[in-house]
Structure formats: C-alpha cells, structure tokens
Amino acid sequence: MKCKISRNAAKMLKVELDKPESEGKLLRIFVTHAHGDHAHYGLGVDEPTDKDVVVSTDSGIDVILEKDNEFLDGIRVDYFYTPEEGFEISNPSKGNHGDH
Image 1 (cartoon, one colour):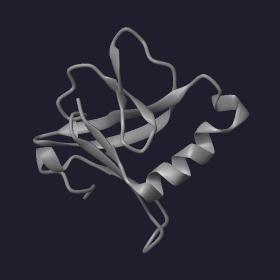
Image 2: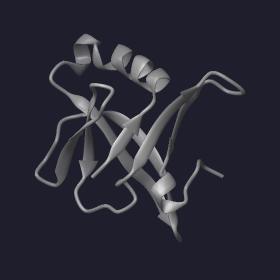
Image 3: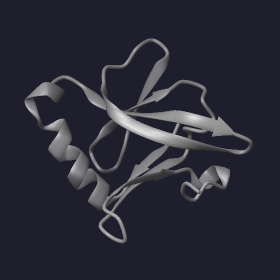
Image 4: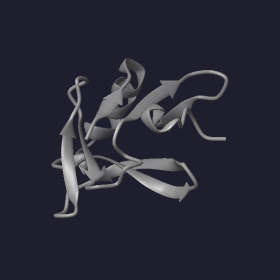
C-alpha cells in the first residue's frame, strides 16, 4: 500500500504526534464513507491492530491503514491554509481528487 504526505501536512501532523498523549501511537487514516467509485477519509492517532498495515512515508511519518481496503491504497494527505485551513485527504489513483 502507498501513502503520500505533503510537506505542509507532515509539519502539522508532527505537532499532533509529538504531544504527550500521542506517545507510542501512529497516524491512522481511515475511510469514513465510501460510495460508488470514491470514498471520504478521516484521520486520527491510534495503535495498529492485526487488521492493519503500517506504511512508511517519505515524510518520516508511519501511517496505519486497514489491510486490503482499496480506497486507502494510494492516498495523499495535504494541508492547505486557504481558502480554508485544514487537511485534505484524497486518492488520485482512484480518481478521487478531493471531497465534493
């Protein structure tokens, strides 16, 4: 499985992962809702289970993904400051270039 985290997103995620309550935990990206040929995503801080795979990214952040979930393979995490500040998770490999 593949996951890409942009430089801006990695910077913001590292702030969360460095908090004391996140010690020993990793970033989890999950599908909140899937319909048709695309999905909507969420993220949190969690510990992996036997249903997960941990993927290393080139940003130095390890990510927990649910095994065999095709909507998670190839996701990209971005962080934008405008027009609204926040994370955007998409899967360009599945034709999903952002939520609608």
